[in-house]
Length: 337
Image (cartoon, rainbow, N blue to C red; front, side):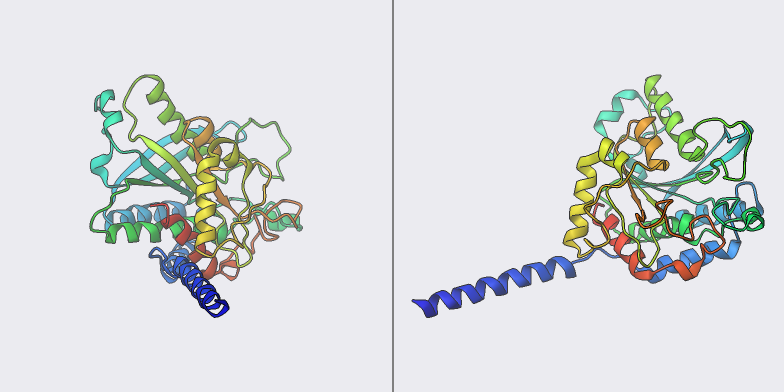
């Protein structure tokens, strides 16, 4: 009897191990090499400061990439006041995948309920005009290179777009949005009067436009189930805690994403630790548009700012990008699609 029980026990352990191994091996398709190349391409433009040549060249390239991957591309133009009250030109780039499930602007409101809810994926493609976290005051006047803060999230979404384009039948409708002017918030070196909500201008514009259509009983471009925003997702030691606004507005989806990370073997990066609320593009998608949205963002409790030591400095370059981090984030997001 003991021998039989021992054999049964060994078989149970073996089956359990195989199940766990399969959960780790069975990964959604994603190439960190491809994502890294997309970061390199963005960096080749130079800092993508709004209204600069590098910024506009990058925007054109993003549109071309999305179209090449099979997306129906929409360019949303508008203006939003910056920290001094001066209007900034906004160019949000939106790629619709499975566009047959997208509501046209003149569609009837009754169509909304008949279409499958879409998933929104977002990241900002602009870079900060000031390195205002530099200790040397003269260094603060340089533009942030933006390898991690901007390019990493965009790169992961571009690789996801490429993978979506390879699918013969895309069952989940997806919109990928590259938000503009996220990093135009009040610089530390500014001492004059300022307005509120100076960060995330592009997502404020998009969310306000979306909410106005809903309020006016007009058809929005889509019926969204929930959204995911990526920001600073490339650092070698990146840890993504449970950001508090995401918990407040989209806890069920946040828990779903973090469970997937655990199952894929990325639990060390997607920590079961609550962070402070972070003002990022997801906040306005939640608060203004009313779409549950989760932020995957690197938060470092060891630093006073909560972000990497090279955040908003001239050191935000390719030396601070890890393919393994890109791979982890890409797999987790792809597992939701």
